[in-house]
Amino acid sequence: MLQDRAVLSSHHLLSAFENAPVGMAVLTSTGVITACNAAMGRLLERPVPDLIGATFFDVTHPDDLDEARRRCALMQDPQAVPGVAPVVRHECRFVLHDERIIWVSVSTSRVAETPERSAHLIMHIEDVSDRKRLEAELNHRALHDPSPGWRTGRCSPSGCGRS
Image (cartoon, rainbow, N blue to C red; front, side):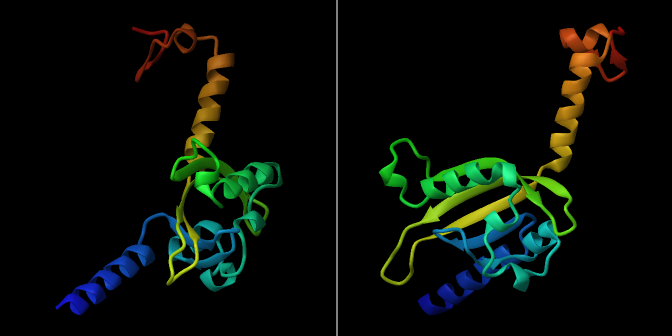
């Protein structure tokens, strides 16, 4: 019975990984992708087999590489740096194969080493490009729109500066 439960649990976990609505990846502690799901392939517009053995640094925008490397280093040994949360979250840009840029939210957790497996990282990656575009548009409008509502925060669904 216990073995059946373990097999069922394993199938559920695999199904959750494969069918997750966001990109998921298992990485070595140095950032090399050892497994990823179909959502990750769709996000990066690459076949999943092509991503195995690559690193997230390979697709990270050059201006975001230093921060991405710093965050990966924090995950090497979370106890070594006081105040490091068990999950590290950040946003960065990924460069797709056709040079388009997408913004992503990355959540990373570290799985400690055990006698059966080496330490590794689990990442969840979600495309937040639409949110970033809307934020930029709202910031622009707040700075440049002459309507008083944008500056005072009195905007309504019917518009700004109107009752």
